[in-house]
Image (cartoon, rainbow, N blue to C red; front, side, top):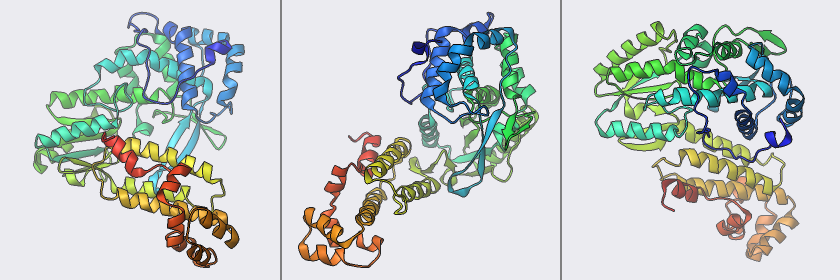
Length: 445
């Protein structure tokens, strides 16, 4: 690969697939995987997703030089079927709200690029056959589409939810069951062997190699597609039985009209998952509930209206508290940049919530915390008084507030700080309005 081969200028966003590369089933798919344009596109995608180094320690920035020197050898080993992936690096991240841990497997950069290249070839083969009720990690589909489909079922009178929880899904996938389903559409033995090598590459935990006899690591580009391939059997079975359902990766909800029907569906589908796909159903977390008691993909439902969940909102406020913590010693410019980045991302996802009641209050709360940060940064009474006077605060109030020894949180809501650091002034400093972001997400502006 040359420098131009690995250069890119692509922002994050929805999955982008090359429509001019339509692989067929009976030719050598590995040739298409290592094809120059496909590998260039794979590198661009991996680079745009950023990510940490894998078990070999190579950062993304070192890949172009490494590829120029070693790519011919790697390419030939891929075509020969002799390529050996490196173990993934184990990363443990806490789930939001302290609700357990999630185990990620980070492949090395070279393996990430190869997996992405495989993904780009296999997606046009598998994706067109997936269920219309499957929304996870698919081109032109999203969690918002899943929520919209649930709303459609609610309007039709299906108000009982069968919420099935698959226990540690990504860690318990049986390789033989998965590969049997992949081989139904992929006949290239070299590619099948390579996928098997990726599944069994092992994981490095504190410098010790552990075998991976089952599971597909979260964090690898190929895992979402392989998971969808396995779960497609379940989707087709549900369609055959005439069920109304929504599937987002391993998050499955089936909508029925009565609790009795829900319990029957729960038992039948659990049996299918256990016996046919050899997956584990978490009996404690799986439930048959009224739609009002369901939390799905961070959302809750009231009638046919969609709200963000209480847990999602609590995580939102917790994150904003961290970004506005007085102990975080960063410039206000950087702080506001990070806050705005988080607000855009959160509202971009949860902005479809139709719950407006808390937003004005939340806007005021965030502005107060920003005023508190400025007050902390100004530190000395003389600085505070001069800043307030420059912002137009009455002299008497500026002096009394500036010399006050009361706490930051209290002083952030005084007449002096609010008349100086007005909402308009905070907006001029760059702080985004939560209300404006919500209005935009709702399509009002």
